[in-house]
Structures are given as structure tokens and as C-alpha cells.
Length: 130
Image 1 (cartoon, one colour):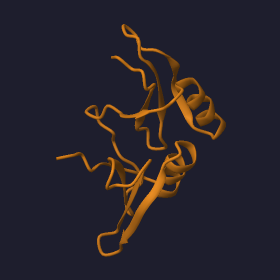
Image 2: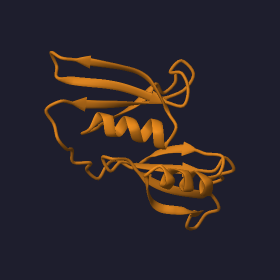
Image 3: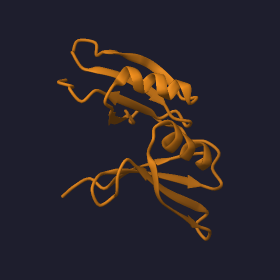
């Protein structure tokens, strides 16, 4: 068994695709419109779906916004250098909401960025221990 994907609902598909591809560097792996259901599915990731988990961005054509609720935490992404990743994300217009630095009560270097819908993305260094 393996995790295939995590689905999140997005209010503006183009804005979300731009964030995940241009700002975070993922690839658009596939996209399909479902006119009868009035929704689009777009799958993004750093590698092929056959090799690693990806994100499914679901855009319901008639929904302008979503309540994120209090159950969602974040998607974690490993980056080579958290400090450099934050600088690159800010340079591309991304929003860093927790600057790179050590985890409180731990030794991992981490940061948090926010996608266009408010979903939190955690950036972690490869040497994380916590």
C-alpha cells in the first residue's frame, strides 16, 4: 500500500496552479474538466504519480470560497535549504507566514507558507529529527 494523493478544494484553479507550479516548483501532471459535474481536477507534484504522492486540486466551478475548518493542519515538503526556499518563494510572490528557523522545542529547521486559499505548507530540511 502507498498514499496516492491528498485532495484540497481550491477557489481559483489558475491561481492555485500558478502557486504550486511557479512558486513551489511542482509540475502539473494531469488536468481534466468534468462539465456535467461542473468541476475540474488537477494533479500536481514533484514527480510522477507512479512514484510518489501528489496533490489533487479540486475546483468546483460554482464555489467561490471554502471554510478551511480546524481539522486541516498542513502539507509538508522537504527542501534542501529552508532559508533559501523561503527567499525564492518570497521572490516569486509567495507568502511566508513563519520564517525559516529552528522548531520550537526541537532541532528541525522549518518554515510555513500559505497557498492562495489559505492552506498551510510546511517546508522542512532533509536533516529533520523532530
